[in-house]
Length: 490
Ligand SMILES: Cc1ncc(COP(=O)(O)O)c(C=O)c1O
Image 1 (cartoon, rainbow, N blue to C red):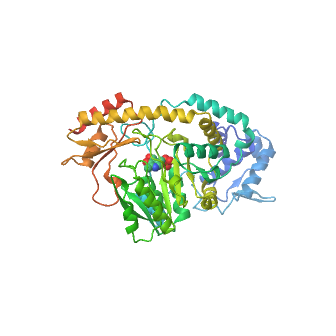
Image 2 (image 1 turned 60 degrees about the vertical axis):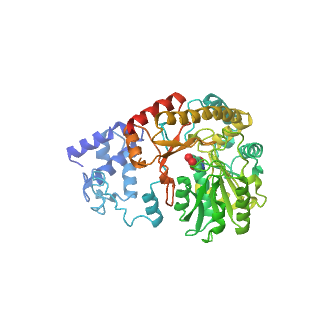
Image 3 (image 1 turned 90 degrees about the horizontal axis):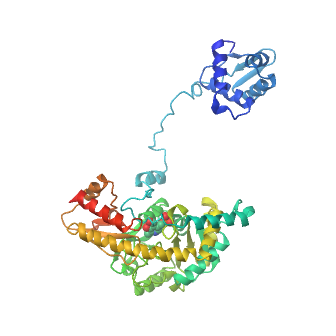
């Protein structure tokens, strides 16, 4: 260190603007440690006395002394009374040059748990992060009343400043649970009290919790086929055996539940608008479904993800409200009725499940951010939620019709559109001779995303086609993108 070059190096490093905000003692200690790790100061080499170094650097001796003491405590220096300070001999080759070397890549084979390897292989859920024709499930966000939201959020911060900055109730903020319960009782024919509501970040989180709390790893769970990939992945992540149950024009084939011999007692279902076919579960099937759950002493997981957007008549009331045996767990999300970036969803639980599910949730991520919960509660209570949903229902209804007409106009020999009674996407069935994969690729080449239908089937025969999201695009955008799609594939 008496060496001029090293002193110069030290001086240059100390002047690094990235370290400018650090206390000088910390800066000296950091830079010396860095030089040791880079091997510039070799193991066993002597450092200058604190007095000498402080003079050379033009800083106080105390500053250097404190830096040396810290380096000694951390094991980088050894100091011997009367003989000086030395770079520790214990700094071996595994540490030396650690700053300069590229990180050593890890081989994942054998490094992950079986569960981790399965998650890696299955690839996660790829949520669309930009609006793109024809990504599924995206609401229109350009017209969202952000001004109202901002105002309500400011009010929340002003009125509840002390509590919202702290941890919140894992079950969710009471005003929001009350708002959700009264909305569901009024609009969805549910029978809910606020203490049955568990506020979460998403439907997927709800599904994962259901899998963890209700079914043991390796055990079966029944699920609609075709069905929502997010649900399948959440169940697979919990290592459940997902057993597909067919769907027809009236929704889930409930008779197949009775025929099931796997011993499963839990079923995932989307009764309002079956995902992806759009079918509505017929009333007699709803009643049979409830009877099945009662008979098996099991659970119905009712995913009511987009029932606000029903375009023909009124949406059917939810299964939860019909179920006097309290075997239904109702799931809702604000990802479609408001905006996906909000990350807010909820479960309505039979009273007996509230405690175990809330405990599990508290372990998973504590609670949902409080400011957003209370802002949403005010948004609902002040009537903005109802108003927004009514306005969007009208807009999406018109977009659905525009999508069907555009498909008919430009792609009539290629696909047949199935007009869904509700929801934000339209299944289109490919005509004979057209390949799903090839058309998806051709569309991708012109920047259009055409989600495939067949990947949503667990069992053959899969229906080949597309599931076109229409809600995030104006009729003009739908027309332009459909024309472009037709040009790319015909
Ligand atoms: C059937 C179904 N359920 C739920 C959701 C919403 O999931 P999340 O709240 O996890 O974003 C979606 C989104 O596409 C869906 O298609």
